[in-house]
Image 1 (tube, rainbow, N blue to C red):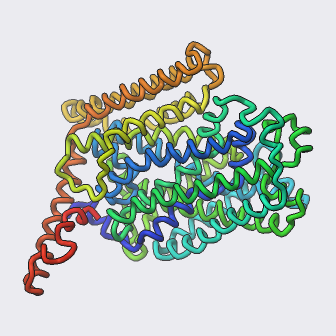
Image 2 (spheres, helix red, strand yellow; image 1 turned 135 degrees about the vertical axis):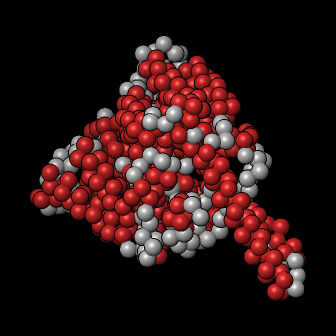
Length: 567
């Protein structure tokens, strides 16, 4: 048995479809619903409704590529592994780094959201927690306390996590639905859609930018949490696709309802005073509107949920990022201590500690929810692009591997997902795109420390297979700089043509990426593990058949046994 197999044996496969859906939905409904409606409306006006739909379509398309990968390799920290399996260390590391940055920064973001909502309480000390742009020293201290709280909820056992999260998720779903309904019934001013600049007061480019930087990508990014906890799924082949797709669709309905409620509930005078949607500056958007229309009970509920929703999401991400660190360590890019899983609790405690330290660092640098949301959005998209490439690459180089989830339309879905991911990165606007790509480069010395000491003949195929991703990031940074002025660029690309150019670039790098894949040592290792499990399952099946007097195929699940082995 390999070291990796040994460490994974300490995980508890106790999470079913309901628990995994709760993990996904609980990740999606965090702080995004508390601030996302106002931030999206400030950018796109009433057209923010369409931004949520576009965001969901993008997330769902990309998620479909990852459900096949997640069912093939149901390991802890799944999202940081797939690029390594298909392309080796360089592409795998860049994808893992981007994914980890995107996810670990959510944890301080959720803590920040809770304290930011608290700043609207009618107490002098509370108003001193947030200065309108970022948290004050006292606000940072309270956010730090929340980070420690998330940490301890994950320290003891995965079963405690599951029970706590299921209860929190129920509350997190009920309160947003209740909020949307109460605001709609309290005040529904349809003139807000036609007045103050009309349906899309800042143009359609603002709608696309809202998808990237208004917290929409941040919100739907939660779909990957079930994939990162695949090592604890009872039947990943069945439960992972249901959990991922179900959580996105349920969340979309809730977010649209909240966006509509917010748009119609904003007092016309507030819009006039602010000079339109872009001038709105509520500290606690939904709670402030509740008070404006006499729904004091709802405001109190929202103040309470401002702790519960972000804390629930922060707790989930503290769990999933620790599994991601475990995955990065097993990819060979972190010390062995971060791959240890406590045998009694099934929790990777050293990885949990590392993420706590990094969360403190992010909290100190990015002190406001909006600034963290922007970073998370772009880093998330960078991490997304490996999914479409990896899923089709593995179909080419490892067709023999069992695929409990296999979509016939994947040859179409994958390139479309690559286009969507590239467009969202472009919509994020320059210079933000360039800044986040620079953050990606900061992680390269860690990769170099572990990889450049290897012999050239061993290192060369990894560099060759990862060249497409490095070049892709550089090209996307250049296109973002040279692109349309409405997306922060220099205006060298005319509106409309910039979308065509980005789409063609996405397809070109998709083709390059798929062709670059190779059966690297990590893929060979995981293939051997899957084959070994298949043999063990066959032996167990033969023994059961002999004891029961029937063959494996006599049982209803006989033909599906090989597919279930991956789980």
